[in-house]
Length: 393
Image (cartoon, rainbow, N blue to C red; front, side, top):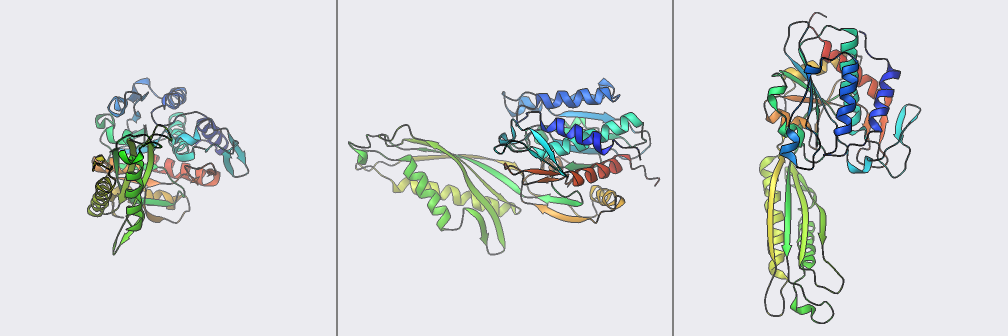
């Protein structure tokens, strides 16, 4: 099988890692991928972008990028997926190779292997097929936007561009032999606490501190086991008070606090219970903090389901095809379920059952992130096997 050489693939990966592209600002990444594919011989009409960014936020630069190739042999269409965005800590990354690893040269900057490694796996696979004219079934390559911000690219992808794929493979994770068959569901909350401002030195008793309400509610959640890792009998999940902003000065009783929180669980009903407990804690705390004339604060909570939990069976066609590809390169298959969201959550929910495979990412979302080059190269071999499987082997 004529794939791209390891050296050229590593160079391609390194270039991708150096391109800034946090969620919503993936424009430079899209242009790089597009130019590489056109140079490899991809027909311009085979490359299309959707308008997902307009449904996500007016600040987003571009939509999802799709390369669709007709098959040279008959077979069900296969789709390979990776997301282009990185978390903010990776912006400004200067990737350096140290032996069999790639890390960030800056100790205060993440690498962005999540998921530029997946982007490179897809791109090197597509280039190898185009340049070497390898036989293949109908193929779709999908590079999504805004995954880190809530899987928005996959949620809003224009399905008509994808060509009705029957099998789908998402490259986003660590060990390439590990097949992720499912993932947790996540719900995000926006909590606004309105207190009453007063002079903190002259008459603090006349005010109602929104910060005090937030502190009481969070303490309640922690003390009753509804914050962090949550285990209630056979049910489990997680929650987190992620961001809190408010207050204007030390001499003013804070009258406004805004909080962003989340709840996750593989069990949808239990996740709903976690959300109710969070809401109950904040409503209760608002009644506990009162001014001397009996007034109290108000809490307003809104939320949305970011992605629903899912779990595929091991005999799902996409899983069987991925397992066969892993074994074909001499690896032993492992199966796992993820505690974080993946593009596969929304793709599966939208009728495209998607299995996820790793591509060498480690310590993601931290300044200690590193990429295992051996695992990356194995992931590329698996992807090429998936993309060129004709049923004649």
